[in-house]
Image (cartoon, one colour):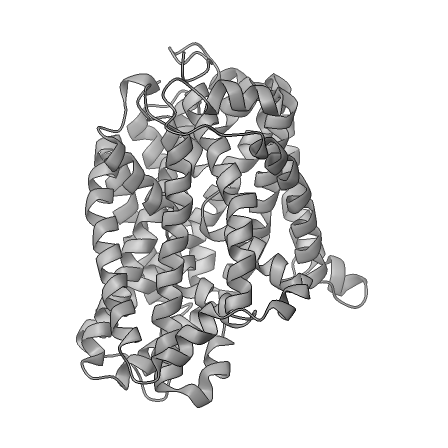
Length: 490
């Protein structure tokens, strides 16, 4: 098994870029503008920033400390933190991120297809949406899924150095592209209406519980907190690297990219099609990105050029996130005793095969996106529970406030972790309530696209398997390998 301590990021800058790349994905660019716009604009931003501090930052700090302290993937990390009986919780965390990887490569494939189509002038199409409808769930979507997964596997096969090199290219390029698009958007006539909508809160709207729950959900889905990805990358941190300040940099860096995306999309919408703004921002993620955005850019001077930049930014965002997911899945197999090359090969083949249904069937894609998107909230719950069992104040003193910490984390974090448990339970309950139907079949069918039964059935199957295999998983993942569990400041 690979000795984690001998493989590290070469610099703090490289590590931060890799982790920001993990966090920044398509959700920042296509989901955030839609959710912000349909939940009050500036009012949503207030709640969104609150939960950055109450959900994302606390969990990012936790994952940094757990990954660096245990030098193990999720299974070993949970076993070392909570005891060997709880390794299955780490397996759940790893599986949830891996299940998302299976269909996220399909999403990256979509961005590749539309990048190529924008270069060739095939989008926007007439009528709007014709190109998307002819491509989605087609053999072409399967081909781009394979290409996307192959690109991520290629980077991960080069090891930590390959991940760091890719991040040094992808993330600065992504930032430059998004900034260019945002500047272009704010210079459009009428863009001020979009800025006013996004940044002017209506304080009375904050009385709506739904705005708060949507803001919490956005933080759970777009910062990468609680996914296990930060934990995985933290394994490769230098012994003297800081954890505390890094978590804040990643959290605020990720949300800054979301804000830029919101400015880019909403200013363009309000400037170009103010009469259709409600219809556009009310579309689903795919509708905004692959149908409306091309139509919007088509109305602008040099619109085709900016459309190419937009889809190139999406490709880079998706690629950097997919790399982290492939690395996490591979890390779990390496902890179980496989050589890195074999582990990556298995992950690549499994990802290719398991992504086929999502590539060819949009209902299946939407089901998996919902089931495992909500599953991330259970992952966050497990992370917080692990630290509570260890002793939250003890954990903070041993794994966050180390000799090499740039800033001191106070007792607020102890209460924030306790609150994460409550937030996770509330979010899971709320999202299941959102898909309730009328009658037994509408509520509990395990094969429906959206309902309570399909979520609980798939969760139950995975949890039963991991609990039954817990002893095997823990014994294999915690074998002596020079990765002793000790506070990272020791």
